[in-house]
Image 1 (cartoon, rainbow, N blue to C red):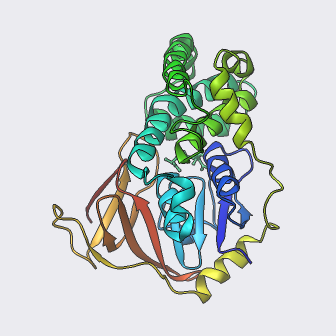
Image 2: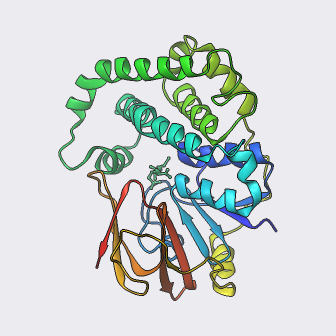
Length: 306
Ligand SMILES: N[C@@H](CCC(=O)N[C@@H](CS)C(=O)NCC(=O)O)C(=O)O
């Protein structure tokens, strides 16, 4: 069976980002389908509190957040395909820009235009997750035209960055192009204004088409119970240790990892296993999984002594 187990649901845009990447690099993968809203009783025992989608499991190593999943795929032998020409720094910077400058606006647009058609509990859950404690539907709707203007401006920057090139860094695609492809997938598939907006950006549409992936291009789905058993039977294979020159945290100490944006994300709590400039790992244990290592990116999270 494939080493990579993607815990996801099919409509998840961030999960689609990883599905596009797995297809682009030709890595075999399997998946577990998880609920779209909490509770997630067969996932959360693995994640020490992380509730977002997707999560990528490799035995007893649990990778959270797509930024960290990209690093894990690189370390598993796909570095050159995700970050061609030793371009990891530029690719990660571009990809973070797409997530922050564009995906946030796209998600806001999709959620705002789903009000009234998506289940109210879904809107409430996502509102609390993405817009902080004081959001309300009327303000989201009032803000929408300005959000679309913002998004068009950022799309224009991305289109210009593709000028004269097939992909953001030249002839071959990278993790940064995966960001544009899942953005286009989200806008086209979930917003009735998406196709018309994207039609103004032909280079982005070309990246979207070049990286388009088919949901069936993966090994058969496994059950969540099987995935828990795989975690239980494995031991974390990832390294331990402090590799951060400026942190006073110590391996073995209890730490709390918190999303930096205001959101309803629960805290992620465990004993520090590993820290370097871009990754934090904690040891976590549950009856369902035994000991696992949970990995997150440093960027975008606050990590403090617990
Ligand atoms: N920064 C995260 C964002 C992940 C994210 O927001 N995912 C959405 C789904 S596309 C989510 O978790 N929604 C709530 C949920 O699935 O419970 C990443 O890159 O993985």
